Amino acid sequence: MHEYSLVEALVRRVEEEAARRGATAIHAVRVSLGELSGVDAELFRTAWETFRAGTGCARAELALAPVAAAWSCTACGAAIPRGAVLRCAGCGAPGRLSERADALLLESIEMEVP
Amino acid sequence: MCTTCGCGDAELVPVELHEKILAGNDRTAAHNRAHFREAGVLALNLMGSPGSGKTAVLEATAGLFPGLALGAVSADLATDHDARRLERAGIPSRAITTGQACHLDAEMVHRSLHGFPWQALDLFFIENVGNLVCPAIYDLGQEANVVALSVTEGEDKPLKYPVMFQKADLVLLTKADLLPHLDVEVDRIRDALARVLPEPQVLLLSARTGAGMEAWKGWIEARRARVPAKLRLPLAGHVHRG
Ligand SMILES: Nc1nc2c(ncn2[C@@H]2O[C@H](COP(=O)(O)OP(=O)(O)OP(=O)(O)O)[C@@H](O)[C@H]2O)c(=O)[nH]1
Ligand SMILES: [Mg+2]
Ligand SMILES: [Zn+2]
Ligand SMILES: [Zn+2]
Ligand SMILES: [Zn+2]
Ligand SMILES: [Zn+2]
Image (cartoon, rainbow over all chains, first blue to last red):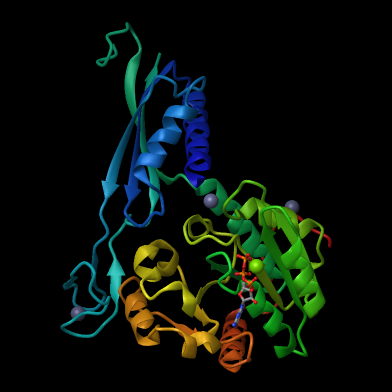
């Protein structure tokens, strides 16, 4: 259940940023979750609900934006269908994964500053 | 005034960060990588399901490089069995006891270096926790990821665990000696791999019979040739002794 350690890292980072800016409240935390990030959205949310109590994120909303994985040809850019062999049917070049599809990113924080 | 809750004078500001939640781990991994490159050590992260044959492959690797110094750290939930097996096979090893953790992270690897004379090594193997899910998302500072997949595990494993296989610089199809007893087609495993990573590198081998071990040796030698020997990266006077 690595989702707990990820949420812990997230909460610590958000608290750090809020403290640095002298925030009085944190309203929302926006995270994008790639399909190939290795993170399960439901487990992540559960871990968030459990872990944030008593932290600076206790009253913050977690906005989780899923990022779908898409593959395209590195040479000609043609899309490679889901589930297919990851080579371009047209030119034979290997595929490339779309950006952010394998990442778990803290995109932004909405906080109140005096 | 705050537009969300109307709470007075405070101002609601969006702070754009766009940073990896694992940025802290990545920084430590970069630190480890700098150490390994500075010392000219080829570090390999060996992953795979529990029992896929990770330790057995390393045991069989011990005799392949008579001229080189090998070493390993082995993740184990509670015991040091794997590290002891590797020691018996002739590879100086340490256990990293992970307790509840289901993966290694860069900090655990860094700490393991403190009690271990890793600078003198040519090849450093990191045997990760047997788990096809989360070890793949933690960079440890390795030069390459090697994933062991035994032929007994089923042809669709890559499709079920794409995150792990997508990160594989090399897939070792282990326990090849069992193929005659199984209804498994190696080509179907290769096909599944080609659907989760664009250019799969696959070696079929058996730690039991030694079949395929020469190709594995060749792969390691080719990777080693790409590691800059004894790079001098500035680590701000930061020294670790064995
Ligand atoms: N027939 C055969 N059995 C093997 C081979 N390699 C490993 N095994 C067996 O598979 C079992 C697991 O091997 P290990 O090397 O302990 O696997 P592992 O991936 O290190 O296991 P964990 O560290 O516990 O996740 C053992 O019973 C081995 O004897 C092989 O090449 N052929
Ligand atoms: Mg083992
Ligand atoms: Zn193409
Ligand atoms: Zn884990
Ligand atoms: Zn240190
Ligand atoms: Zn260090």
